[in-house]
Image 1 (cartoon, rainbow, N blue to C red):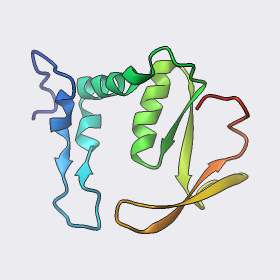
Image 2: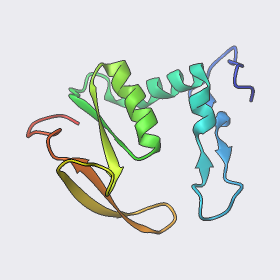
Image 3: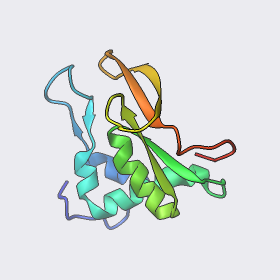
Image 4: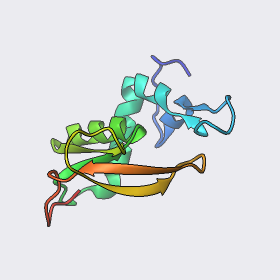
Length: 125
């Protein structure tokens, strides 16, 4: 799909065809969403669809997990006019953090971290 083309009728999820499958093997994610981010209408429609289930919900801040979540989370926070909290791979923040171990898509054990001063009790993230 051309990065400038917008379908005449945009069915829900039409932008998913912009993403490219993994051609490099098992050490990479199964899909590359970066073409979607290059398409202005595709990105806007994707963010609108992501927000749909949360219409009317009280949201104080949007959080996104490194790295795809940074792009979609920041775009979502911008639409909502809310702040954005980056959930990072451990060792990248120079402030006080809390951390949580996890297993990534390739089966590797990793640790995520988030700054401690961004979330307070009762905040809807």
